[in-house]
Amino acid sequence: MRTTAVEQERRYSDAVARLRAAGLRSTRQRLALAQLLFAGPDRHVTAEALHSEAAASNVRVSLATVYNALHQFTQAGLLREVAVGGHRSYYDTNLSGHHHFFFEESGSVADIPGDEVALRRLPEAPAGTRVRAVDVVVRLQRDKN
Amino acid sequence: MRTTAVEQERRYSDAVARLRAAGLRSTRQRLALAQLLFAGPDRHVTAEALHSEAAASNVRVSLATVYNALHQFTQAGLLREVAVGGHRSYYDTNLSGHHHFFFEESGSVADIPGDEVALRRLPEAPAGTRVRAVDVVVRLQRDKN
DNA sequence: ATAGCTGCAAATGCTTTGCAAGGCC
DNA sequence: GGCCTTGCAAAGCATTTGCAGCTAT
Image (tube, rainbow over the protein chains, first blue to last red):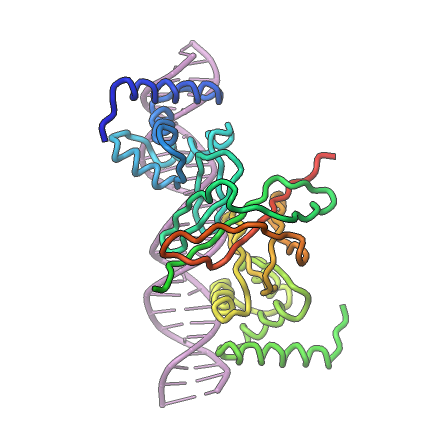
């Protein structure tokens, strides 16, 4: 996995720009996490996973700071929290409207490509409420072959 | 809330029958919980809520036993666990295929009536997996009136 | 009689918080 | 310099577990 200096520079300034746009200071920790999250294709992370990844990249960040950053990024609209049920929180870098597969044995999440799920009908929101989101989760099991 | 002796008797034997069918011993605690869960219309409970309810009905049950019972009932097919995301588990007495509203401010769950949600398309399960369930959650916010 | 159940308290896993020290603008 | 951030450790929740004693069958 080679990365050119030019590419690294691009990722770095991209991260700086994102943080600035979100109104967040460009601290070493947030820059590192933003680069991990946004440098490649869309991803789904847990706090713990992102923390390990940072450690593997020789970035010192405390777990508490990872939690803080995930919340701040989410609030700033850089991430979206995915509710697949289960005990931990997943964060998705793909902000467009889409749904998820949940792999029960590994506890991992994947986007369902584009328009492969479509709803035919939606219920009325009960009085006094409005629909904030509609989430579809397709729960998968290992196939018994 | 009056309840006739005849009615109480019916609820009791219903609970005994359910437990027997599930292969579970009819203990005082399980009988009480089964009656709370299945005597009325469909419901959505958390462990904590069911525990309080039992206490309010003068039934002594430990929280650990409530958790045990919820798991056993679920495994026996008497309940279904609802994954609305969030940090706690909800159990639904309505076993038929249906979807849920989730009220974000109160943290409560409600069934979406009958056929008010329908999917037009479903994705293929990825290789080596099979679909165990498809859950649709409509997340609701208080309407700004 | 005995396998299964219950309750307590301690343990666990994930997440949040309090607060002193450090870093960005 | 001042305010925001960070890190640590401790606290917080929901849930699970170990185990001694109880109970349904």
